[in-house]
Length: 173
Image (cartoon, rainbow, N blue to C red; front, side, top):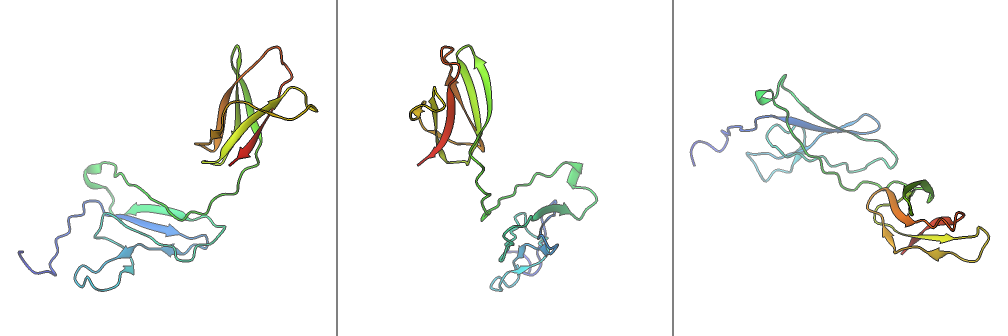
């Protein structure tokens, strides 16, 4: 090992700064480690040594909007090129469940329709139909649909001999 432990040469090329602004306007800084006395507890401040920064919100506001801000102190980034970054969020409060309703029908072929509804990612749904609005029970159409996005859609067979078919979507376990 050459030189003193206290003489560190910084190698960070583009010093990006992560800040999380709370709904009240308070700035939350990232954790910073002491490179000289590594046994010291981390503090929160401007982290100018690391290419990975972490901000922890210890008492988040339940119904507030936080702003994540990534900036840099220089007038230009190295070589004038864009600087890529990634953000990982955890502990996010889930949004309220949307009202389960069909939002769109579209004819997609001679004998097919596409039906779309607002969904919860990961929730299972079953499409059902009946031919009479007041008629007896509902009949399952196709298998269970597991929503991969917040707007689920399925392609349904369309029978021209049943022009007044009624559809619904229900949540299933």
